[in-house]
Length: 484
Ligand code: 3AM
Image 1 (cartoon, rainbow, N blue to C red):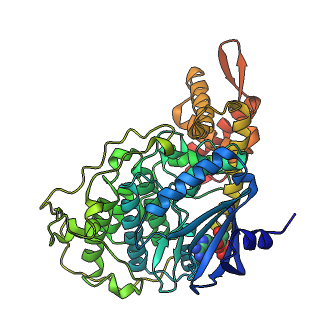
Image 2 (image 1 turned 180 degrees about the vertical axis):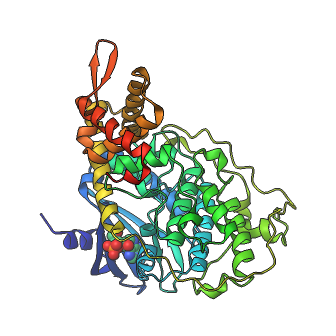
Image 3 (image 1 turned 120 degrees about the horizontal axis):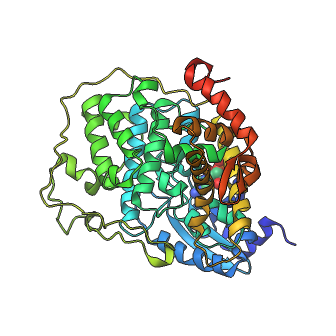
């Protein structure tokens, strides 16, 4: 069998293949140059494990069409999509400036820069949401910088294509996204909507500003998901007091559990963030970051209120029309989300910028030490979890894949039900469940006898769980013994 380079050269004879840039879960990325145009590009090659499935191929094709229709300065543009035999190849803009994660990890990201990149991404998401495209895997690793240092969101929609009914376990795993940034509804298999991406951006901004995730991983993806679904994140100012009040409030609003309690849409989020950042960092906060961000009128118009937002001749006019509706082809269980209300002519936010009160420059927060490793571990764990779950309940291809994520949560719900029927105090129950999630492997957690035993109609708690109650009781009585 020909190696990857030979295959790619055969499929894309117009390109001179250069260095391999890297390998991700979904393929290998090479740098290449168009022989005639001289344009340098990135080529992403999808392994045959995904592209050999005709259904998956259909979805790649239709999603590639959607992604190609997105035209936004902060979305990595797709130049071409080629399929031949079992191979699918995406040709994209080359982004040689590395990822947002790289910059964060290098400690090279001031709070202003973090807010500025977030504005760029919100503009990108707003554009995509209006066209029925959800990203569903927003994270610093998926934000790349081009030659000019312009941040752009990458891998748009690919996770979704892979997740929607793809027949491989690995592909099924990808629907889970990345637990570190995952909205409660995505983690529990409920319908996703633009608010799901809003949450992920909120989780990302929380991390960029504070150096910590809203819910740190203990190495167990299910435990992290459980926290996103059930627990309130620590208010960001408690761990990062340097974050200005207003900016902190914006971050925490994006992290609300109920999608309807978050921002109405990505544009509202951007407008509020811009207003609060202007109040905290001063009028010129954005230009001082050296990160070029093309804030469109649609994103910032409400805050600045200077332009007639309904002007149909505006280059951003398309972004001002409420056309979001999850297309059936991409959404097996359509999100019950009302179309965003769009912009009201003349509407200006009441959240006007405060008088400029620049804060002293802040040093970038330290990223959580082992987070990189944890993310990799978490990714593996999630795939493992879903693979196991797929085995248990998804022999039928008719099931919407989004349901997969429900199973770990359903197992948690069964545990809680067993607590209730056995008269266990709710706090004690939550504590023991969390300990179980932390201490057990995914397979053990899913195996009934590790937590519960069925006896007739009754659900009994197992001896290891009862031992955890004892530990938890001590922990709850003496919080300092929490680590015990
Ligand atoms: O292996 P690392 O993390 O260095 O950032 C992506 C990742 O890099 C990079 O390819 C690797 C595997 O996904 N990548 C993805 N799209 C890219 C693009 N359009 C890209 N690098 C440059 N341009």
